Structure formats: C-alpha cells, structure tokens
Length: 161
Image 1: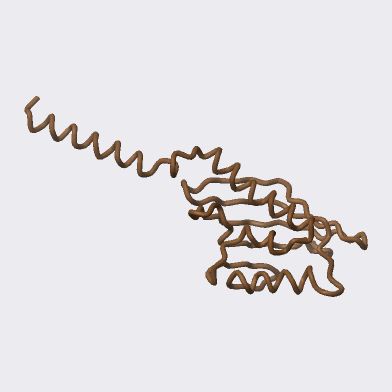
Image 2: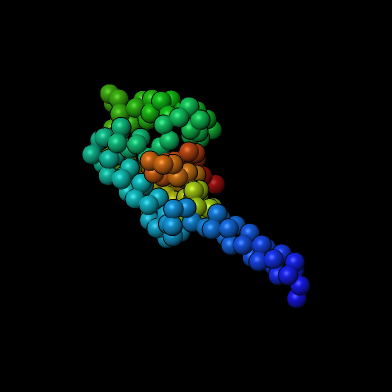
C-alpha cells in the first residue's frame, strides 16, 4: 500500500472515530442514565404536586416563552402561561390539586440531549373523583438538567364510544 493511501485510510478512521465520539452520549452519560434522569424529573414533579407545591412541579418544565403545552384542544405557549393554566385549573378556590400518580412510563431516547416520554396520569381528588388520561412529553437536556419542552396531555372522556 502506498504512503498516500495509508495516510488517507488513517485520516478516514480518525474522522470516523471523531464522529462516533461527537454523536455518542453527551458528557459520557449512558442512555440508561439519561432515562433515569428523565424519570427522576417526573417523580420529582409527582412528589411536588402531592405536596401542593405547584412551583416545584413547574420546575420540571423549560422556563421559556417557547415551552408548549397542548390540552383540551387548546395550546398554551410559555412557562408562565402554563403555570397560570395549572393555577386556574387545580390551585384556585374551589379547585383542588388532588393526589397525582404517573404510570406506564415509556422513555425513549431520541439522542444524547432529547427524550420522548409516553405515560398515564391519574388524579385522586378529595371528593372521590378520579380524572385521568394520557400524556406525551418531549424533554431536552439543558446545562441545568432535563426539562420538558413540550407537553401534550389528554383527559379520558366519560362518554367515549
């Protein structure tokens, strides 16, 4: 093999190695570690909700005007608007927060800094009602940790087909 061909081959392998490192898990974090970190955000939110700490619950969301929240055929844009929506729906006079439980979590890593989560939510209210439904979330890993950048939540219909 010629010297030029050997150098080309070494350069190609070097580029492939650099690409593999660049596309590998961020900061040496394994995908399972990222999944666990995403689940911790959700469990922390659940715990905050159950302690009637709406600000603690909202800490799991990206604090940005670009946050999106879809529910009940309505789109809410921004962290503050999402907090206001939660306050008016669950934390105002005549509206109770209840006890929240997330279940059926399926966390799929879309890359080292993005995750897609599907799951179920269930509230147990003091009056015995039990609203529940499904959610899909998109998470992004920021320097301060994993945050929800998009939330699409649906409630189960009482009179479904």
